[in-house]
Amino acid sequence: MTDLNRRHLLAGAAALSAAAVTGLGPTTANASVQPAGTQAPGFYRYKVGSYECTSINDGARTFPMPEKFVVNIPKDEALAAGEAAYMPKGMVTVPFNPQLINTGSKLVLIDTGNGVANLEPSKGAVGRTLQNLAAAGVDPKNIDVVLLSHLHPDHTNGLRLADGALAFPNAEIMVPGKDWEFWTSEDNAAKAESNPMMKNYFANVKKTFAGLESKVTKYEWGKEVAPGITSIATPGHTPGHTSFAVASGDAKVLIQSDVTNIPEFFLRNPDWHVMFDYDAAMAQATRHKFYDMAAAEKATVIGFHFTFPSVGHVVKDGAKYRLIPSAWNPTI
Image 1 (cartoon, rainbow, N blue to C red):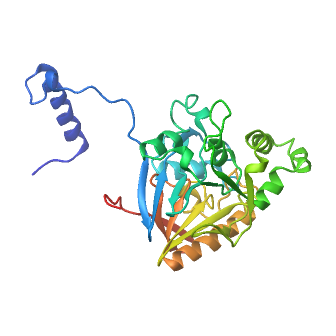
Image 2: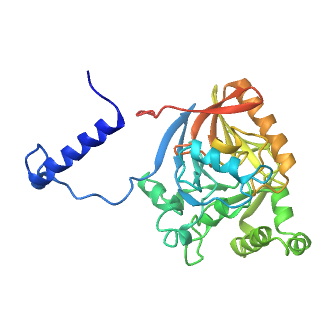
Image 3: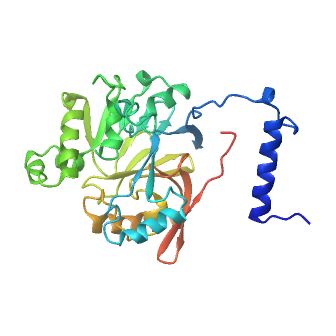
């Protein structure tokens, strides 16, 4: 009988390694291949009716968990959730995934990622949207609409190249009216002076959108904002935070944007409050309302902070929820 205990497995691995070094085993030095040292492009296509959609990976950031990453529970509980999700000890990993919707008449990019200005400083961890669009065969000049779910930096900073030029020069930029009103208010910015994170958010909006006012279209909730794409009110994360229903024929998906941050924490525990939420109680209520709807409809849900390719289904689990990732489909 094969012994699968840990000591046996480690001894077997050591023996294989020794055989490789001495040339006595099947692995010899002249059969080795140099490591590639780079990751494969991150894009994944899926269909919604006649629409071809593409999940574009902007990367994932791993960082030491802040003391109040989850505001309303002890940090030890949050760390335990991270360990249960096999995140590096003491760390948290947050992915970023814009969505490209080809309606046939319009090429719509929903959110833009962290921007290429972050590519080099992050050592390639984030800011990968443009290179992954290129790998998917998409010229940024052909993007007709950049549809922003809200105005946080990881969703808007991809609007600009490192030199400040527009990454999508021919695109109409659409923003939720309620978010635009909030983040462009000088009064609101003045009130945020004592909060470093909020102060940075206001400054980032001012910098990112400087000179773009004529290219910005403000949209309302409950409206078709592009062919087959309807805006859904999901406030709390920001005052104007928006999700989208993408529908074609009898098919529909829900693009949840930031209804949750990482699902291992905030979908599994919908009453946990992430540090990035503007109105945590409202965001909590929104999560329950949105996920109750998604679970009842058995809808496909796309999450900006879900693990790539960020496609799955949400099921109720008592007062909580579980994410069931969709199987990778080799065809479209």
